[in-house]
Structure formats: C-alpha cells, structure tokens
Length: 110
Length: 113
Image 1 (cartoon, each protein chain N blue to C red):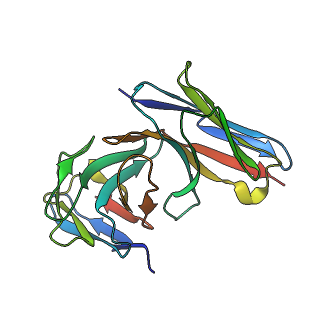
Image 2 (image 1 turned 30 degrees about the vertical axis):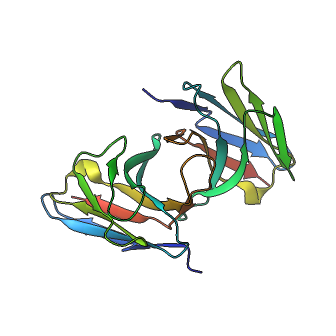
C-alpha cells in the first residue's frame, strides 16, 4: 500500500508558468511534510518542508499548501525556470517512519 | 565537509555475484538509511540504522543485508545478486527521523545481468 501518492508523474511547463505537484497521504500520524528536489545524476536534496500546524509555507518561488482535513499537500513553483527542471519528491514522516511519493519529473521549456 | 559519500558510483554484476556498497557520512548523524530508486516507484527504504551497532528492516529488505560497525559508515550487502536488484541505490543520513532533513549521497547505479 502506497502511503504517499504523488501526481502527476510528469509535468511540462513553459518558462514563467506555475508548476503544481500534488500529494496525498494515508497515515494521520505523519507530522512533517518535506519536498525533495533531485537533479539528474544527483541525490535528492531538501527543498522546503511544512508542519501540519500551518496551511502554507513560502520560500522564494516555492510554496507548500497543506490541507490537513483532506490529508493533501502540494508544491507550487511560481515563475518556473528551466533551472527548475528536475524530479520532485514529496514525503511524509513522523518520529518512527518516513515515506516518499513516487516522484514528478518537471520539465520547464524555455 | 564531504557530507554523504558512496562507493562505488557504478557497478555491473552477474546474477549470483555478491557485492558491498559503502556509505560514509561526516556529519555525526545517528540515523542512516539505504534506499533504492526505480522508475515510477520513488524512493523505497531497504534498511536503516538508528545508531552504531543497530540495524532495522525497511519496506523492501529482502535480498539485502546491512551493517553499522562504525557510526560514520553504513554498508549494504547483496549476497546473491538478482536482475530485480538492478536499481540506483542512495544512502542518506539524518540527525533523527521525523522533522529532520535527510542528506543523500550521490547514488550508486547497479546493473545485474
């Protein structure tokens, strides 16, 4: 059973557009929701994370929106740039467990 | 600081051969993890360790063994490689599990023929 479901699998956006990636989780005990960014040939790296006590967190062009009642959270990339082209993973964790989504390959066309 | 390093970067094995992947971290992290990454499957946890001398099974532990003899090192072993173990393997470390960043190594691409 996949505990964190991520969509879409792939996404193509024009430069300057908004990229949106969605995730849903099952386990209500999860209390930390990070997003990782992975460039080809590299390991994932933490991009931004949120706790469930807030509904939104913004860092530069990257925003996480969190809906606790729906058990869903999403990553919004504003003014998407070709340098944002990468694979993005959502994750959910608590003190005992951490699960990743299947990943979204984002391509930003110039 | 080198962060998390992995050796080797690439390896080709024949079915039935064995090998060990080495992970090292210089951040004094207690927790270390081994993941495999397959297309459309995301990152799946193989084994993890909460401290020197301790290991535990993750989601997909079958066919793998691990050891954590030193705090800074976490070894992943394949005793008898199978084509289904063709994957990219990532090691990661963190201060704790939960609301703590996991730092990933650059990965090892393993092909089993």
